Amino acid sequence: MASKRQITVGGVPIGGGAPVAVQSMTKTETADFDATMRQIRAVADAGGDLVRCAVPREKDAEVLRRIVAESPIPVIADIHFNYTLALKAIDAGADCIRLNPGNIGGPDKVAQVADKAKAAGVPMRIGVNSGSLPKHLHDLERENSVEALVTAAVEFVELMERLDFTDFKVSVKSTSVPNTIASNRLLAERIDYPIHLGITEAGTKWSGSLKSAVGLGTLLADGVGDTIRISLSTFHAEEEVKVAWEILKALKLRQRGPELIACPTCGRLQFDMDTVVAEIEQRLESYEEPIEVAVLGCAVNGIGEASHADFGITGAKNEGLIFAQGKPLRKVPQERLVDELFVEIDKSLARGRTEFEDAKAAEGALWLERIEEENADELTPERIAKLEAAANGSTALPQLDRVRLAEADSPTAGRRFKRV
Ligand code: SF4
Image (tube, rainbow, N blue to C red; front, side, top):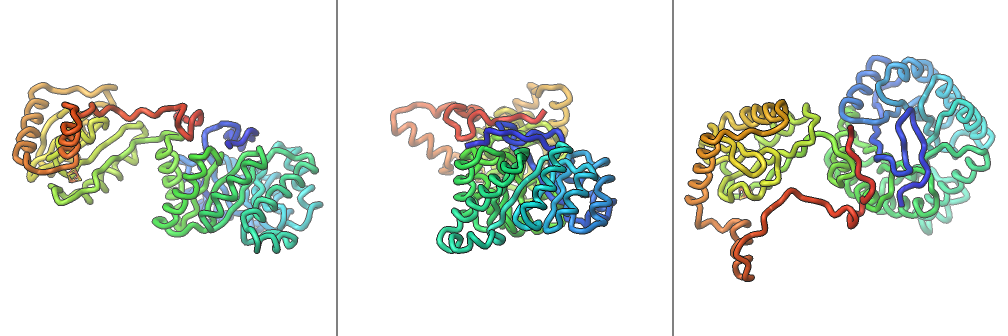
């Protein structure tokens, strides 16, 4: 279940039904002010709500004040082993302190940090990793690693409550996707504090993104998780943010920027789809509007499959067609397809609507008809569906409409959010 409690990190609400917050962690030496600020700005530009910086040395804590002052998004100080650095980070104005209560020198040190954080109104993230559980849980860990991880987290929650500090979120981290799913589900049943989700050391951009999508996506679809970080082996923290957004967008939990739809291609492909899709994806990164753009590798099927898209292109031999909302806009030489698509997107966004010129739309429709006729004997998926519908006694294919989600039936019901 989504957490009942809510905390606020530098103005960003976490938990209690707030939009799932996206965070990343800088990969620079924090003491290197310029490099760290460059990365924080890249994270913020990519849509990061929060950023975390490692504070392993005095010199990092010293620079933190300037970083917090200049950062466009709240800064979380990541502390391990040295509780005095946590105290200094609070003095430096950090918006949140991340620590593992089990590794900073005992409950009295945790108490000192909690007292100072409480006085300063600074929340904490208390995190437990599968690789660093307290000794008394090692036997349990061998029997049931999920139970051990969650028990450690709940013990730390109880410790914070005894210290009269409740302004925190909790994380249980594991490198195993099944353990991450199981432990966070269990944790969500046992505590009502906000939960931070992540897969530890997930891997490269490719494998790490997939592991995170499976692990975090499963939990988020269950309603578990209030803030996420995708851990990828890359020096570009903003890449983590982009992956996090794709996961949230795929689950319709949050909305940000365009969505690209592209056919998987097959033997009917009529143009260099790989290059075209990559170029469109890259150019769409500079748009904030939640438009849907479709790329179909051939016009054999018409444009029915992408009729819900705001804009789209399809091609055949030397020519291509730009369409919008299921209707042809105009045909263009293939080498101009991408540029002209963006001309149409820009025009429509500037006007607030798409205008169809009758003559050009009719020319495009004729072109499409011709391609469909020329390939009339092709047994495409759409035509197979039509034949099946006819065999079932239905005369027409159901009209494809913009996908509408049944809010009440959705596993993410009530958690939808549009970034404004
Ligand atoms: S039939 Fe055309 S649109 Fe469908 S996958 Fe093949 S190339 Fe893409």
